[in-house]
Length: 299
Ligand code: HMG
Ligand code: MG
Image (cartoon, rainbow, N blue to C red; front, side):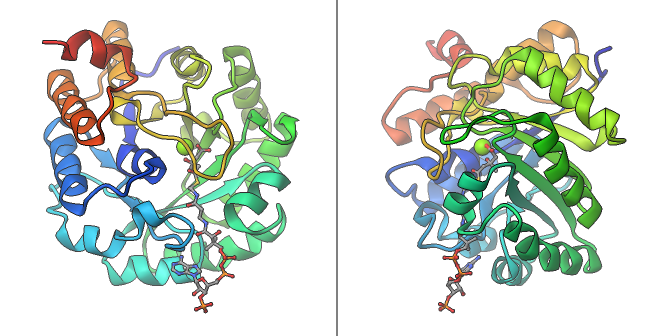
């Protein structure tokens, strides 16, 4: 069964730009967000309040929030790893945050400077305080399928991490294929394992990277299994600076093309979004890897 409507969780300004070698100027980031809102995207992950030494690309998070002309009805979530990050996000008036856990020991150490178990001690006070202040807290789980250092990741290990984040107070989990190694059968197995553990697909979102060209196939498998929130990145920007071999996210244009073909509602003006990605590609000095941007943007 396919959902009638899909929520696109646009991560280009965060997952995309965190990975650029050159820091993208603030005015370009702001115009990017404005153009994506104009194209009809309803959720725009805007930036991260992480330690600036770790991700200098997003060190301007406070300035970005201060300069952002928020479009009514659009959500602008940000990533927050710890209490210091939550302080900074609250100072900027943020109401929508995401913590980001991982399913493997190696990656939590590389991405959070914490072990697999230690990550929960860092997140717990963040989630308690944020929920107490009335914020919505999403929980990412990275390395849900494979890890570049540990290989294939058992579904039980992923479910155990996800369950703890939901029990902590996250309203939704985003299941991340950080390095893009998932295939559709694996996606279905993981979703079924969550359901068997008592976690409904209505609490789950998927976050695919297109390293091996499987992101759309994986998305289709997730939709067929009842998932109705899909993360993607305009123009297929993205990666993760702390994950070897993580390349671009599923391109939002590729996703929209498929959703249109399936007749599923999403609210995005594909033409405007393609124009935005072509514009962004010019700013970054290289073409978008998205096939749909290539096909429609070549005017
Ligand atoms: P740490 O170095 O262990 O930090 O970093 P610490 O807790 O030891 O603190 C050391 C100093 O840093 C202190 O300053 C803190 O105040 C400061 P001092 O007292 O020494 O002067 N500090 C901060 N400053 C500003 N903002 C903060 C902050 N935190 C500490 N938030 C930490 C630990 C978690 C902070 C670090 O590892 C970090 O920032 N990691 C973020 C890495 C990241 O952003 N990765 C990319 C996002 S995840 C991703 O892309 C995957 C995803 O897309 C899904 C998928 O594809 O799988 C979501
Ligand atoms: Mg990602």
